[in-house]
Length: 217
Image 1 (cartoon, rainbow, N blue to C red):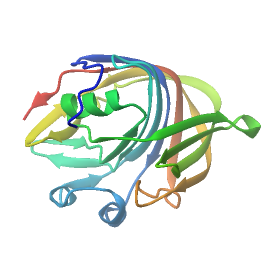
Image 2 (cartoon, one colour):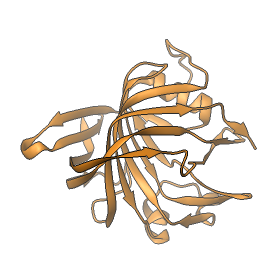
Image 3 (spheres, rainbow, N blue to C red):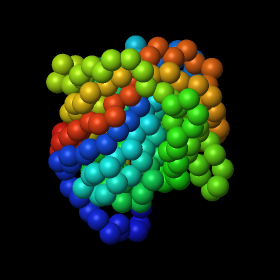
Image 4 (cartoon, rainbow, N blue to C red):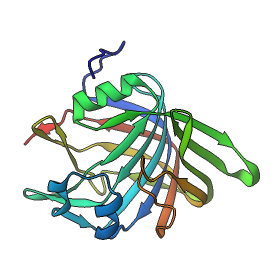
């Protein structure tokens, strides 16, 4: 983080793109062994619903970039249950630097490929040092439905150095359910979800998201 990026963008951010949300209910034992969590958060883990998100941002204040992130589930933060991002990769250094500085999101740099494959599936591949460590094939199906975080506010907490930050991003778009196949994960770099039971998968082919200024707590 010594290198200053070409673009510094303070919040709020408005982003446009497409993405996939894979929903799981992770057991505490899985999170303890695979969640990339600091020890002080393990006792605060409540679970309920966790997710893996695969995102292609076409527009953002730091330009286009791709993203893979892992949310273990809900945690008890003081007076509120909220989410926490424990592992996240993005495709540009501008996104890494600004994500850490603005919201305490622990972004790391990786390479991404998003490609069409047979039978209407898209393959999402993430690599680091020329080694693939995450891949999945996903295909939307069915009728579209509208989603809006205003119905179910999404709170998450992250640390920026010693400061706890509370952020409530807002998002909306039209979504479809998905089929998911051929998940492969390198567990030293990302939680191995390949044998976890998928609750549901959602595609959002066009969304708008806003990341506001975080609150310090």
